[in-house]
Length: 227
Ligand code: DX5
Ligand code: ZN
Image (tube, rainbow, N blue to C red; front, side, top):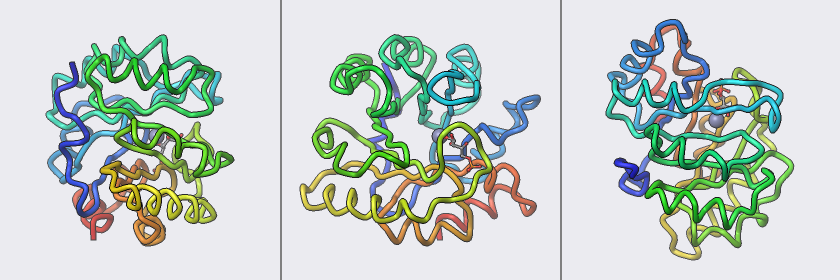
């Protein structure tokens, strides 16, 4: 049972979810406490299988270990081909929200049901090539839509400004239906791109490099993103 549903997070104002992909993994615990103290709203956990994306990151054992050291909600982003087989493992490890890709192999309706069965919040993610309309049919069933603003797989890439019309279309659709669905963007978010993302209607910002590696510290970085 997931303890910190994303629906309990404010949909007014901007939420920041630092991506631990940019943390120093040799001192991961300290890094997480650092961004928690700095004002992070949740922690973004990037899971890659070396198949859906050309990179491998972390899995349930790491999520389970870090669950014990922070009260932040875990926003687990599954960049994996077969999400259905791993929902239980991530929920048990301590995920609060589980976001999977529309482009993965499993039937999205089945994955949504499986995440709900675990009592977790549901997120649905779109790669850059997938249009806004491809998730319209699921909007009533999810808590969050994640628009990738880079090709998934690696941190530190350049923000794709041409994804902003998609964010705008999703914001309009969510609002016109009166839904309380978070709209999250992920990839290349920093002080120079945040305005475009929030201006288009995003209310949750994933930021790895811009938070964990900001020369003036995480508190400064999060403050700027929230402004
Ligand atoms: C990319 C990941 C992102 C990534 C963001 O596949 O989903 O969460 O870590 O990193 P930055 O903020 O450095 O672009
Ligand atoms: Zn991510």
